Amino acid sequence: MLVLITYDVNTEDAAGRKRLRQIARQCVNYGQRVQNSVFECLLDTAQCKRLQAQLLSIMDQEKDSLRFYYLGKRYEHKMEHFGCKPSYLPEDPLIL
Image (cartoon, helix red, strand yellow):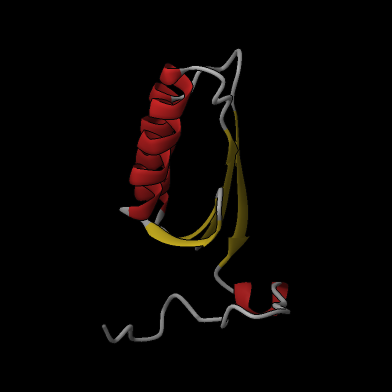
């Protein structure tokens, strides 16, 4: 299933900036950054729960916000992209 993950981390202090880097690093391990604090991740249920647990252990629930949007398996019909960054399908081959 495709999961859209968004986060907002309070970066007023060094601890917040560290949490921001740690959350981004974990999300990069599972998906692709599509905007500064937005990731598209193609996950199965176990991976999703694992990533959730990791992110929840990093974030400060008093200062930060984390959202998971579950777009499911037929996500192609639930998304539209406009603008300069090219769109991609997470299941397509990625050539580096």
